[in-house]
Length: 233
Length: 358
Image 1 (cartoon, each protein chain N blue to C red):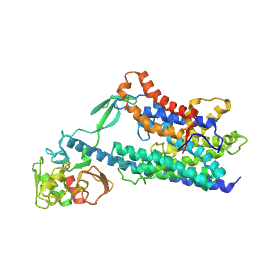
Image 2: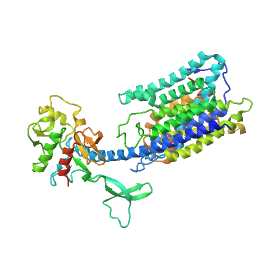
Image 3: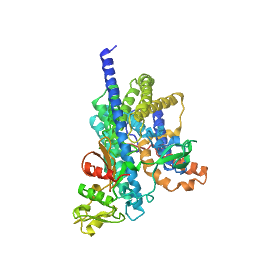
């Protein structure tokens, strides 16, 4: 029997199995982070879907509750499949059809909206973000542009502009931007996750998603997040 | 290029092997209409055709996705290419020298890249206006076959021993599984690379491993010229059995995934390929022969190219709504007509002794 080869083979197999186990563990961890990011992106998609049917205009902020959330009732509710219908369980919504082994499944809201802050306006710096938070608390109308102090508005102007798919063209027409900046949507956050475990997912106007360390750069600076939370339900 | 007459016999051609190759072509042909008419179970879009003969992810692309043996088709194809490539390459090396073997390799890889250019550049320019360069160079079907073929030939030259080449293939599969396990690179996931991980050619790595394994199987088959069963008895069947056990175990840890050809998928292809070769060899031994399969198998590459390019165009002529009118209509036009059409071409070429080889 070639003992050295057998031992070497067993050694290689053992190292391989350990590495595989460690790798799969890390993968599961990464998938959990990805799931959170996907939830944030899905929630932002509700606003994007609204924009598709409103000539690119994103939803307004919650005007009644004055929260950093979608104005209630104007954005379709997102749901996730929860479980099979049960006798003692009152579902919020039900999905019927040939659903694999099921004929009906209960649905639950996609996200707890309290875990996310929808910004509603184009802000790309902390100063602009804090001006927005102040405007929200002050009770100004939130159905259109908001006038703020010079330099605290979108791109350093005196106006906070509502989120819009064609916002760059509008900013150029109004003279806020000298020329079209294709990177502007990628710098404009639309949705910020409430930070947890030192991280927060942020969805941007171009619908790309980033996981940022908290506290970190805008929009997850400590002061801005505190301002968002002050306006939370 | 085609040979209308084979001028000198390089190696024996085994009919049972052509039967096996023909079976692979048949699986490829049937998987195309089943994919075209896969429907959507969730939205109620009707499914036409047998789901077992389609990619499983077309019905449920979850984590893990459903897999069928059709999902192993490409890996199985590479394994068969490696199997026959061993004999074709080494016979040229022995009988005509290094130059002939080198040109055979270059021609084969060149033809495959030419097909890749048609698929990924010309057809893409015509349909979307934008060529798919990554698919052309390494990620597309024909590119993977080309690179897999190249790897097989290189490994035959660098590692003449079949057992050691098989060890290399196993090593590549293990490497693949480790790279796939860690969240280092993007792979086909439900969350669409939200973690913005860099790309890695997992599929290409897997196909290279399979073609190298195929070349080992090819060499094992020829291990005892006086006893064709020796290779099966001593290597092919035991290794395939081991691959079956390994695939089962791996599927629990890292479920099979078609798009990235992960370890479980590759091992599945290995045991399916090995057992399939054994079955067709046994058919040959007992004298069972299905003529159509031989015709399809003798022009494997041509059938693959024709099927890949033209069956899709044919199926576009019959929208699902038309076929739903009658299941017999679906069977005739969707299920049987593609097989009949390609079979007619295969039989026509075979009867005239035309084998289109790279």
